[in-house]
Length: 325
Image (cartoon, rainbow, N blue to C red):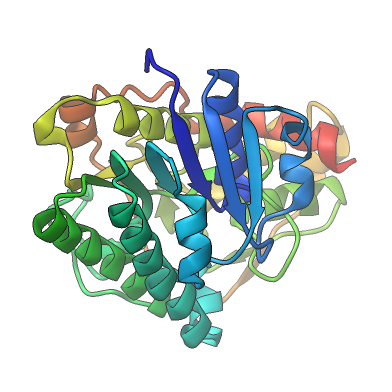
């Protein structure tokens, strides 16, 4: 990315969005951040507000006029705004659909009408559904197992149709269990890593859903940032209008994850090594195992993830220790 661009980051006050804002601001790009603080936080973008290259719009992607305002003069869209969480979608499928499908369509229409160069969006590994194939290859998916998974698959279908019907370039990034700095440990739908870190730091027992043998391709935030940058910068015509797994390409069981967290946190507080874990029932809508093939991203985009889960956990735990105390 040798040029300076104007980039819209929806959901820019959230975990992934705020990290993208920080990265691209540091590279000298103009950033427009759109967020309604449904799941994002003002403190995530507070350091950027004095930057003349940063513009914040408080608004909701369910409002088409807000979307049109946000894309004005923008070169690229990094669409991160969504209501995440499988359990949240099971509890309230209507709102998940309004945000993740209707909001997504609003953003696509606004981006098309504004002639943005490329629309890059957060897709999800949940799209693989009940497919038991490992590793997960982009072209082979199963049936969705939750309303959330349905919404993210519909996003891919809409992006494909808009590429074919209107000529807008799109790239979907199927995120696999992203973790790292600024991921919120609080709330009913907190992700497993920040939730477990918070529990351990308070000397409380985290609850593992099931026997701990479910596995995930945990993906550090800096790998995700790299994929978003590659999605913007690629000039390979064969690399657009498709989807890519965004992961490290290795899987870790929940038991292994707990041990990694305890080992790293024990460097700061040896008592954490003695904290026990509790096992609960498996969670509705969860897939047993997830492992990404990242060959397509390597071949088409030059993707080369720098952070394994062990390296990422070490970085994340250090951040949480400084910021959660």
